[in-house]
Length: 298
Image (cartoon, rainbow, N blue to C red; front, side):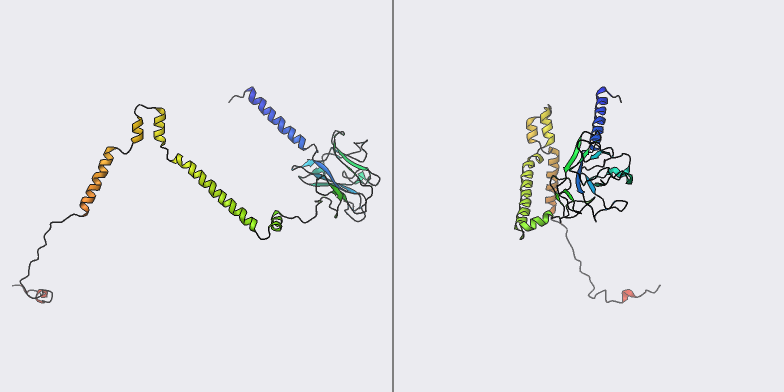
Protein backbone atom coordinates (compact mmCIF):
# COMPACT_ATOMS: atom_id res chain seq x y z
CA UNK A 1 0.00 0.00 0.00
CA UNK A 2 1.44 3.36 -1.03
CA UNK A 3 0.83 6.57 0.88
CA UNK A 4 0.28 9.71 -1.13
CA UNK A 5 1.19 13.21 -0.06
CA UNK A 6 -2.44 13.78 0.77
CA UNK A 7 -2.44 10.91 3.27
CA UNK A 8 0.78 12.08 4.90
CA UNK A 9 -0.53 15.63 5.21
CA UNK A 10 -3.76 14.40 6.78
CA UNK A 11 -1.87 12.25 9.32
CA UNK A 12 0.40 15.15 10.28
CA UNK A 13 -2.59 17.46 10.62
CA UNK A 14 -4.42 14.95 12.82
CA UNK A 15 -1.42 14.46 15.12
CA UNK A 16 -0.90 18.20 15.38
CA UNK A 17 -4.57 18.70 16.26
CA UNK A 18 -4.45 16.05 18.98
CA UNK A 19 -1.27 17.52 20.40
CA UNK A 20 -2.80 20.99 20.37
CA UNK A 21 -5.93 19.77 22.16
CA UNK A 22 -3.86 17.97 24.78
CA UNK A 23 -1.61 20.97 25.29
CA UNK A 24 -4.65 23.20 25.57
CA UNK A 25 -6.20 20.88 28.15
CA UNK A 26 -2.97 20.81 30.17
CA UNK A 27 -2.40 24.57 30.02
CA UNK A 28 -4.33 25.25 33.22
CA UNK A 29 -7.04 27.49 31.74
CA UNK A 30 -9.66 25.21 33.31
CA UNK A 31 -8.47 25.95 36.85
CA UNK A 32 -10.45 28.27 39.11
CA UNK A 33 -9.81 29.82 42.52
CA UNK A 34 -12.76 28.25 44.28
CA UNK A 35 -12.56 29.02 48.01
CA UNK A 36 -10.19 30.55 50.56
CA UNK A 37 -9.90 31.21 54.28
CA UNK A 38 -7.97 34.21 55.60
CA UNK A 39 -8.17 33.61 59.37
CA UNK A 40 -7.94 29.98 60.39
CA UNK A 41 -8.34 29.50 64.13
CA UNK A 42 -9.82 26.01 64.38
CA UNK A 43 -10.45 24.86 60.84
CA UNK A 44 -8.42 22.83 58.33
CA UNK A 45 -4.79 22.01 59.22
CA UNK A 46 -1.79 21.32 57.01
CA UNK A 47 0.60 18.36 57.13
CA UNK A 48 2.37 19.93 60.10
CA UNK A 49 -0.85 20.34 62.12
CA UNK A 50 -0.83 24.13 61.77
CA UNK A 51 -4.03 26.14 61.35
CA UNK A 52 -3.02 28.40 58.51
CA UNK A 53 -4.78 30.29 55.73
CA UNK A 54 -5.54 28.23 52.66
CA UNK A 55 -6.69 28.59 49.06
CA UNK A 56 -8.66 25.95 47.19
CA UNK A 57 -8.16 25.53 43.42
CA UNK A 58 -10.86 23.69 41.46
CA UNK A 59 -10.35 21.83 38.17
CA UNK A 60 -13.44 22.43 36.04
CA UNK A 61 -12.24 20.10 33.28
CA UNK A 62 -12.98 16.41 32.86
CA UNK A 63 -9.29 15.57 32.53
CA UNK A 64 -6.40 15.83 34.94
CA UNK A 65 -4.53 19.13 34.99
CA UNK A 66 -1.07 19.72 36.45
CA UNK A 67 -0.86 23.02 38.31
CA UNK A 68 2.91 22.70 38.35
CA UNK A 69 4.62 25.41 36.33
CA UNK A 70 1.94 28.03 37.05
CA UNK A 71 2.24 31.13 39.23
CA UNK A 72 0.30 32.33 42.28
CA UNK A 73 0.42 35.92 43.46
CA UNK A 74 -1.34 38.50 45.60
CA UNK A 75 0.13 41.39 43.63
CA UNK A 76 -0.98 41.87 39.99
CA UNK A 77 2.15 43.93 39.35
CA UNK A 78 4.25 40.87 40.23
CA UNK A 79 2.52 37.92 38.52
CA UNK A 80 5.51 35.60 39.04
CA UNK A 81 5.57 35.94 42.82
CA UNK A 82 5.40 32.21 43.52
CA UNK A 83 6.32 29.54 41.01
CA UNK A 84 4.64 26.19 41.68
CA UNK A 85 7.30 23.53 40.98
CA UNK A 86 6.64 20.86 38.37
CA UNK A 87 7.27 17.15 38.48
CA UNK A 88 5.55 16.39 41.78
CA UNK A 89 2.45 14.14 41.88
CA UNK A 90 0.91 16.48 44.45
CA UNK A 91 0.42 19.17 41.81
CA UNK A 92 -1.77 16.99 39.58
CA UNK A 93 -5.45 17.84 40.05
CA UNK A 94 -7.86 15.03 39.05
CA UNK A 95 -10.89 15.70 36.85
CA UNK A 96 -13.38 17.90 38.70
CA UNK A 97 -11.02 17.73 41.65
CA UNK A 98 -9.39 20.12 44.10
CA UNK A 99 -6.02 21.13 45.48
CA UNK A 100 -5.36 23.21 48.61
CA UNK A 101 -2.53 25.75 48.74
CA UNK A 102 -1.24 27.34 51.93
CA UNK A 103 -0.39 31.09 51.71
CA UNK A 104 1.52 31.12 55.02
CA UNK A 105 4.94 32.27 53.79
CA UNK A 106 6.46 28.95 54.85
CA UNK A 107 7.89 27.56 51.62
CA UNK A 108 10.14 25.22 53.59
CA UNK A 109 7.04 23.19 54.52
CA UNK A 110 6.49 22.04 50.95
CA UNK A 111 5.78 23.10 47.40
CA UNK A 112 2.13 23.82 48.22
CA UNK A 113 3.07 26.48 50.77
CA UNK A 114 3.17 29.92 49.13
CA UNK A 115 5.53 32.81 49.89
CA UNK A 116 2.88 35.38 50.88
CA UNK A 117 0.08 35.94 53.40
CA UNK A 118 -3.60 36.75 52.96
CA UNK A 119 -4.04 39.11 55.91
CA UNK A 120 -3.09 42.28 54.04
CA UNK A 121 -4.05 40.94 50.62
CA UNK A 122 -6.69 42.50 48.40
CA UNK A 123 -6.51 40.14 45.43
CA UNK A 124 -5.47 36.57 44.63
CA UNK A 125 -4.47 35.67 41.08
CA UNK A 126 -3.41 32.56 39.18
CA UNK A 127 -1.22 33.02 36.10
CA UNK A 128 -0.25 30.68 33.29
CA UNK A 129 3.24 29.25 32.81
CA UNK A 130 4.28 32.24 30.68
CA UNK A 131 3.70 34.58 33.64
CA UNK A 132 1.52 36.92 31.58
CA UNK A 133 -1.74 35.12 30.88
CA UNK A 134 -4.22 35.54 33.73
CA UNK A 135 -6.15 32.34 34.40
CA UNK A 136 -8.30 33.45 37.34
CA UNK A 137 -8.45 36.30 39.83
CA UNK A 138 -10.60 37.12 42.83
CA UNK A 139 -10.82 40.15 45.10
CA UNK A 140 -10.93 39.52 48.83
CA UNK A 141 -13.80 41.01 50.85
CA UNK A 142 -13.01 43.95 53.12
CA UNK A 143 -13.92 42.05 56.28
CA UNK A 144 -13.22 38.38 56.96
CA UNK A 145 -14.56 36.43 59.92
CA UNK A 146 -12.31 33.77 61.47
CA UNK A 147 -13.10 30.21 60.33
CA UNK A 148 -15.61 31.48 57.74
CA UNK A 149 -14.59 30.86 54.16
CA UNK A 150 -15.34 32.98 51.13
CA UNK A 151 -15.91 31.06 47.93
CA UNK A 152 -18.04 30.26 44.94
CA UNK A 153 -21.55 29.20 45.83
CA UNK A 154 -21.28 26.48 43.19
CA UNK A 155 -17.95 24.94 42.26
CA UNK A 156 -16.55 26.91 39.33
CA UNK A 157 -19.65 29.14 39.22
CA UNK A 158 -19.71 32.93 38.85
CA UNK A 159 -21.40 33.81 42.17
CA UNK A 160 -19.36 34.34 45.33
CA UNK A 161 -20.28 34.60 48.99
CA UNK A 162 -19.50 33.53 52.53
CA UNK A 163 -20.12 29.80 52.84
CA UNK A 164 -22.13 28.16 55.61
CA UNK A 165 -19.56 25.38 55.98
CA UNK A 166 -15.85 25.22 55.27
CA UNK A 167 -15.28 22.76 52.45
CA UNK A 168 -11.56 22.46 51.69
CA UNK A 169 -10.99 19.95 48.86
CA UNK A 170 -14.75 19.35 48.70
CA UNK A 171 -17.91 20.59 47.03
CA UNK A 172 -18.90 24.09 48.11
CA UNK A 173 -22.61 23.38 47.74
CA UNK A 174 -23.56 21.48 50.89
CA UNK A 175 -27.32 21.80 50.46
CA UNK A 176 -29.42 18.67 50.05
CA UNK A 177 -29.96 18.17 46.31
CA UNK A 178 -33.53 17.92 45.09
CA UNK A 179 -34.00 15.35 42.36
CA UNK A 180 -36.12 15.89 39.29
CA UNK A 181 -38.63 13.31 40.53
CA UNK A 182 -39.11 15.21 43.77
CA UNK A 183 -39.68 18.45 41.88
CA UNK A 184 -42.23 16.71 39.67
CA UNK A 185 -44.06 15.34 42.71
CA UNK A 186 -44.31 18.84 44.15
CA UNK A 187 -45.78 20.12 40.89
CA UNK A 188 -48.12 17.14 40.38
CA UNK A 189 -48.92 15.48 43.72
CA UNK A 190 -51.93 13.53 42.38
CA UNK A 191 -50.25 12.20 39.26
CA UNK A 192 -52.69 13.48 36.64
CA UNK A 193 -49.97 15.10 34.56
CA UNK A 194 -47.89 11.91 34.69
CA UNK A 195 -50.86 9.88 33.47
CA UNK A 196 -51.58 12.29 30.62
CA UNK A 197 -47.94 12.33 29.56
CA UNK A 198 -47.74 8.52 29.61
CA UNK A 199 -50.95 8.13 27.61
CA UNK A 200 -49.92 10.76 25.08
CA UNK A 201 -46.56 9.06 24.58
CA UNK A 202 -48.15 5.63 24.07
CA UNK A 203 -50.87 6.81 21.69
CA UNK A 204 -48.43 8.97 19.76
CA UNK A 205 -46.18 5.97 19.30
CA UNK A 206 -49.12 3.84 18.13
CA UNK A 207 -50.19 6.53 15.67
CA UNK A 208 -46.69 6.79 14.26
CA UNK A 209 -46.48 3.01 13.89
CA UNK A 210 -49.85 2.96 12.12
CA UNK A 211 -48.78 5.64 9.66
CA UNK A 212 -45.45 3.93 9.11
CA UNK A 213 -46.88 0.50 8.30
CA UNK A 214 -49.70 1.99 6.26
CA UNK A 215 -47.30 3.92 4.05
CA UNK A 216 -44.79 1.10 3.77
CA UNK A 217 -47.30 -1.64 2.89
CA UNK A 218 -47.03 -0.59 -0.75
CA UNK A 219 -43.42 -1.73 -0.86
CA UNK A 220 -44.31 -5.25 0.32
CA UNK A 221 -46.66 -5.68 -2.66
CA UNK A 222 -44.01 -4.88 -5.25
CA UNK A 223 -42.81 -7.87 -7.28
CA UNK A 224 -39.10 -7.18 -7.54
CA UNK A 225 -38.62 -9.75 -10.29
CA UNK A 226 -41.25 -8.15 -12.49
CA UNK A 227 -39.99 -4.67 -11.77
CA UNK A 228 -36.39 -5.51 -12.66
CA UNK A 229 -37.48 -7.35 -15.77
CA UNK A 230 -39.55 -4.37 -16.88
CA UNK A 231 -36.82 -1.83 -16.12
CA UNK A 232 -34.17 -3.80 -17.99
CA UNK A 233 -36.54 -4.06 -20.98
CA UNK A 234 -35.58 -7.58 -21.88
CA UNK A 235 -37.18 -8.88 -25.09
CA UNK A 236 -38.41 -12.04 -23.38
CA UNK A 237 -40.21 -9.94 -20.78
CA UNK A 238 -43.25 -8.43 -22.45
CA UNK A 239 -45.45 -6.01 -20.66
CA UNK A 240 -48.53 -8.18 -21.03
CA UNK A 241 -46.64 -11.15 -19.65
CA UNK A 242 -45.60 -9.09 -16.67
CA UNK A 243 -49.17 -8.02 -16.01
CA UNK A 244 -50.79 -11.44 -16.57
CA UNK A 245 -47.97 -13.63 -15.41
CA UNK A 246 -49.15 -16.47 -13.19
CA UNK A 247 -48.63 -20.19 -12.73
CA UNK A 248 -47.54 -22.25 -15.75
CA UNK A 249 -50.24 -24.21 -17.59
CA UNK A 250 -48.75 -27.59 -16.69
CA UNK A 251 -48.94 -26.79 -13.01
CA UNK A 252 -52.54 -25.64 -13.29
CA UNK A 253 -53.51 -28.82 -15.20
CA UNK A 254 -51.85 -31.06 -12.63
CA UNK A 255 -53.62 -29.30 -9.80
CA UNK A 256 -57.00 -29.55 -11.56
CA UNK A 257 -56.53 -33.27 -12.26
CA UNK A 258 -55.55 -33.97 -8.68
CA UNK A 259 -58.63 -32.15 -7.40
CA UNK A 260 -60.88 -34.05 -9.82
CA UNK A 261 -59.51 -37.42 -8.74
CA UNK A 262 -59.82 -36.53 -5.12
CA UNK A 263 -63.44 -35.45 -5.44
CA UNK A 264 -64.43 -38.43 -7.63
CA UNK A 265 -62.89 -41.02 -5.31
CA UNK A 266 -64.14 -39.39 -2.18
CA UNK A 267 -67.65 -40.97 -2.49
CA UNK A 268 -66.91 -44.11 -4.53
CA UNK A 269 -69.64 -46.81 -4.87
CA UNK A 270 -68.45 -50.40 -4.32
CA UNK A 271 -70.02 -53.31 -6.33
CA UNK A 272 -68.91 -56.17 -4.02
CA UNK A 273 -71.52 -58.85 -3.09
CA UNK A 274 -71.55 -60.43 0.35
CA UNK A 275 -72.93 -64.05 0.36
CA UNK A 276 -73.92 -65.87 3.59
CA UNK A 277 -74.02 -69.71 3.37
CA UNK A 278 -76.28 -71.52 5.80
CA UNK A 279 -74.66 -74.36 7.80
CA UNK A 280 -76.43 -77.72 7.80
CA UNK A 281 -75.77 -78.37 11.46
CA UNK A 282 -78.39 -77.04 13.79
CA UNK A 283 -76.20 -76.90 16.81
CA UNK A 284 -73.50 -74.51 17.57
CA UNK A 285 -70.02 -75.90 16.96
CA UNK A 286 -68.77 -73.77 19.81
CA UNK A 287 -70.62 -75.89 22.37
CA UNK A 288 -69.77 -79.24 20.76
CA UNK A 289 -67.03 -81.18 22.53
CA UNK A 290 -66.52 -83.74 19.79
CA UNK A 291 -64.21 -81.48 17.93
CA UNK A 292 -62.05 -81.11 21.01
CA UNK A 293 -61.43 -84.88 21.46
CA UNK A 294 -58.38 -86.59 20.06
CA UNK A 295 -59.14 -89.16 17.40
CA UNK A 296 -57.92 -92.72 17.90
CA UNK A 297 -55.65 -94.05 15.21
CA UNK A 298 -56.92 -96.89 13.07
